[in-house]
Length: 438
Image (cartoon, rainbow, N blue to C red):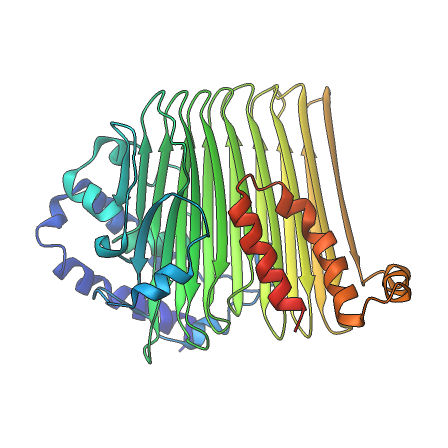
């Protein structure tokens, strides 16, 4: 029997355990979506390199394990949480351990009246109207098997609702910690962020795992930015280097909304991010930036889609990669400008540095333009470090490793400096320094 069929049967067989733990939750409208998604999951196939969208990313290593959904709460040291905070940043914090909300580690500070920040599991139980309106509307579980798996097993994750006109001054930091011990666990954070008209919020999704632990994170995040809303999103991915991290982010933008996302990724043996943003009305602005730094046999894959469905919208995308040893990078960025989306400005760039002769990047920027009054461009570069620049620095008495570090900091600076929060910029600079000053 085909191994992937076995794995599908394995996940399907775990659905009964989820239902047993719902304690009456089977009557909840969300559970109907779970069952629909489970049905879709059973019909879909796991992708292979024969599928164009997965041509350079084999998930065969992921299918070698029977990951087990985890429902038990786990206690960890508060020092672990403390080590993940950003110095001098006064902010609200919510923590999930092995996919479960941990209120004892969470701290909400001075949130405006009407703002909701917390566990999506709690909001499912309350049958929150905002949740029911938006949940599962943007992340397609009919055609994407990992989204179907997430939707079928939706249990917990982060829920943030910012009502019309409310501004949250300080960022909201969401930490997802995985400590699987000797088990091979599956965690599936399911996140929904809704910013209503004229609201503003900054959200940090932070994924962390213990080194050398093997586990699978399958995260889905849906984001809604209504008219004139401003949403800044930062994702830090620092999973175990033996973990698997598959994530989908779907962004729905309404009139004159502003959305920006910055992804910084260093962890996981296999990482796949699908980031899609759609302009549903005029005047929107969207930025998708990313920086990944990988080595050994890590694989990082970013697939992005910027859908200009309406006119007078602007998008900017810039992804950078630093690859060492036998690591592999994939960037597939598509911009679609639909027929009525006149006066569109869309720019996309992907740059990669290879630090070894065995590292490899496959990049595929794409433009599909069906309107005639637009400004669009894309570009990609792949190369090794500039020997002339290294020679210049060394001629000024700067050592080999220091020269390398300086040049890599300079390469990464475009993405890092576009992050608005200084303490996060400092945190990322520290990661780069520790990684390349060894």
